[in-house]
Amino acid sequence: MSNMETYGLTEQDLLNVQWKIAKQKKYMESQTFIGEDNKVKTLLDVSYSANLSERFYPRILNKVDTFVSTSLGLDLVPVFLTVTADGFFRRMMRGDYSEWTDDLREKYLKHIPNNKRNGFYLDYMDKHSTLTPKDIYKILGYQLHRFYKCETLRAIKKAGHIYTSIRVTEPHKDGVPHFHILMYLPVQVCT
Image (cartoon, rainbow, N blue to C red; front, side):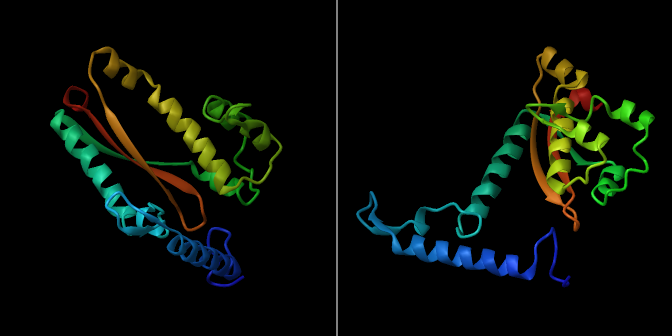
């Protein structure tokens, strides 16, 4: 295993991806059309690909700026959250289920999906199957969905107020995901 291996990618995987991106860029540069301004443009000129377009990041920044200004304009208060899985999930990625007791299972019964729509993760964990970063992402996503349906946020809407949020997923070095969430809440909730 080399020092380059991260998130389950090898150096060969990285080279393969770089080759594919270069191939995609060459293709997009070779495909032209006449724009509304009667100028010749390439597919790359109109692309918003995160890997190829210089317009991707400014566009994201513009969306975030619009989100923030709109939320502040509504007199909402910013709250920053970091949402991460409990440590025992990370150990389950190594096949270590020593903490997965009946009591812990009972405590997490509502917080781990076990259905056709979201996946049968509780059953999977009961078999002591090794989890992947994608499994943990799905479990965290399910927990976040439940959070958005919590009584506090429902009460905000019921009182006639609004809240907004934006989320970014970020992986740790071992690939385990966590969420950064910027919420804007009514001042009445935050005082």
